Amino acid sequence: MADSLLRAVDIQKSFAGVHALKGVSLDIAPGEIHCLAGENGSGKSTLIKIISGVYQPDGGYIEFDGNKLGKITPIDAILLGVQVIYQDFSVFPNLTVMENLALNSELSDKRKIVNWQRMRQIAEEAVATINFQVDLDALVGTLTVAQKQMVAICRALIFNARLIIMDEPTTALTRKEVQALFKVILQLKAQGISILFVSHKLNEVFEISERFSILRNGELVVTGFTRDLDSAKFSYYMTGREFSDEQFSAKNPGDTPLLEVRNLGLSGAFEGISFKLHGGEILGITGLLDSGRSELALALFGIREADSGEILVKGKRARINNPQAAIKRGIGLVPEDRLSEGLFLPQSIADNLIIAEIDRLASRFKVFDKKKRAREVERLVKEFAIATPNPANACQTLSGGNQQRVVLAKWLACNLDVLVLNGPTVGVDIGSKHDIHGILQNLARDGMGIIIISDDLPEVIRNCSRVIVLKSGRIVEEMDAAEATEQAILSRMM
Image 1 (cartoon, helix red, strand yellow):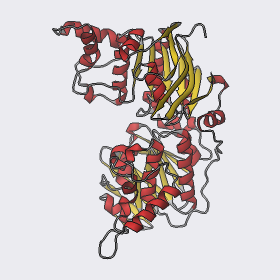
Image 2 (tube, helix red, strand yellow):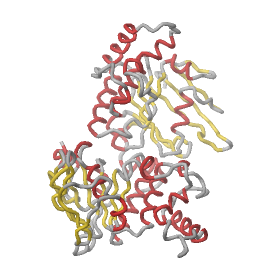
Image 3 (cartoon, rainbow, N blue to C red):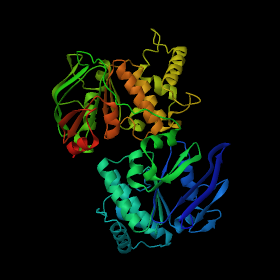
Image 4 (tube, one colour):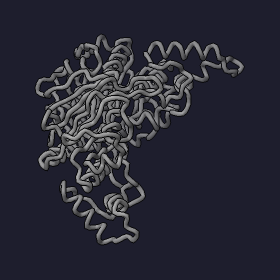
């Protein structure tokens, strides 16, 4: 394209003989919102780092404003107007908003004495560019995830950004915050700034981008206009697989509920929650971030004990006041943050898989049976298709989707009756997402009761038999998932 702001031409990059990029080309026009999509390990991050000067390509070249560039450093890229906002935003939590915004400018100007008045003026001008309302004297560590992201965007604009690369910018945002981010992105576009929006979420690609490029296994699979894309094509380009999106329906649910809650309440979080869960059912619970949905998950697993109402397991009243009590009654929880709450990342994949059944793998003399352990690890890796060359590797070496499979496998080795999943596919690529949904549906068909707590409405509608909508800590609607629509659920959530 003659009017391209940036062109990456035939980019090749290898690491220790592994081809991360195999002749990938990409072009972005001025003021264009371009989505770069691909599963984990597809080469997205490597391409971003080459464009921003962190890595040097083994072959191919970068062209900016029609000028072919030689070796570029991160500083060169910034001077050209390329800014990258990574998932962690690279902000300083112990500094104020003003200091985060103006510090880089002060350093780049090589000023030896801090002029607080000048720093405040820089910060005020930066937030004004996108009408971001924030206390400049607030510590960034006290801000929400969405506010930290806006600080990172404002900081990028200080350096006259012409291309802003946003790496998975919506991973930790609520739906409402995503809409606010998209509004800002459209403002940036109106100012002539190009956006390379990196994501693997189908609805976001359709909603915000004009053109798209999809990578798979280090190769460019397709590039084109978003208007020519649909759900089936997107999934196929991303994974090379075709998926069936059939609606889940419960088959022959049992007579006695596996789990029943009656007028359950937790002060400051939720109240009057009542529902039944039968074997063979998948119950969806959705709502905005402040709806009490996550607190309900914690109460069902005993991390936060409910202070009113009652829980019945298989028709008998049960006090679930800690996780041990929940596990004893056959209830497991896949937490919202698998990295800090669901896994021991530095430990081996094998240790993470068998941690919940460690007593069962010991002999009657409490001696650990290594052969029994090895057989169990081999079974779980195979059954859940965990992609690893060696289960002795650290769990942190796995992709997000494979980490989530480890969490699932760990719990299901305990022969649970009820599994509660809070955000089961957050940060998981599209192929793993479909696989995880398949696992959950098969578990339900085998008689388990499953609760999916999520604000991913397509996920809830497609995989659940019933949907409960929470708002301000109360149930405002219960729907048959087969008849529910995203719009109907959203109208009750809001």
